[in-house]
Length: 305
Image 1 (tube, rainbow, N blue to C red):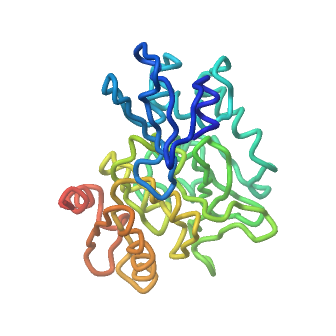
Image 2 (cartoon, rainbow, N blue to C red):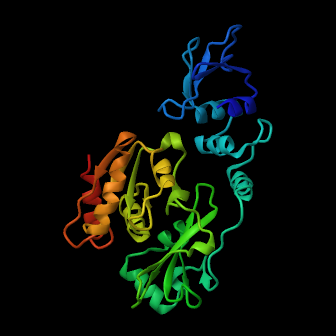
């Protein structure tokens, strides 16, 4: 909070768990504007002026003061570390942020990305059709395939963070295989706590409801069928970083498979109930978000209150 206020050129003084400063939206001689500085509080990063009644999130404050068009531009600036006079456009900011976030993670050799689905190998295209993957899904989730290397014979699903930096992947076999899914090996340096779909999330102040699944293909199905935000944890494993990221949403819908692994994920996610509202999607026995079909999936997700 103090660093953000300093970048906005607001001279602030700490007062308990708040920072007090002159309101930038009206003239005043005594500071009447306060911003909360307590990560344990749901009001952390929110400000209010007791003089003019202006208030909101740190994103709104940055958007107003920097005269930015969208909350996302303000959020990207706020997380970038850039000073007030260096406001970049969203695409530029994503590159700036990504370049400062440590070593580059790469997909294993043999993965072919950014290829239109009509140019995929026959077996890969047949599997995509079977799972009802559309060209829009391929583009939105940056899907690819591998015909050689460790991931050969698989649909490759890259995992990006919130600034479109590649941090992990999952790969689904399109034919018979000892393991349906392959994840990165430890030596590949994938990010622990990566969440598939995070690159499509809105800024924190706009995060209302997120549907969480085990597998990436299920998350893709939820987003395609409902148009709502969805994410996958790549199985039932649950990391502290998962919890930190998911706790930024108001509501979490658990859409896990009706099996032992799904029960494990459900128990883990229910722990978030202290911080967010946790809801459940109920699938017919032996079915998941992919297998029920888009129409039935819309009904299941739409019935959750």
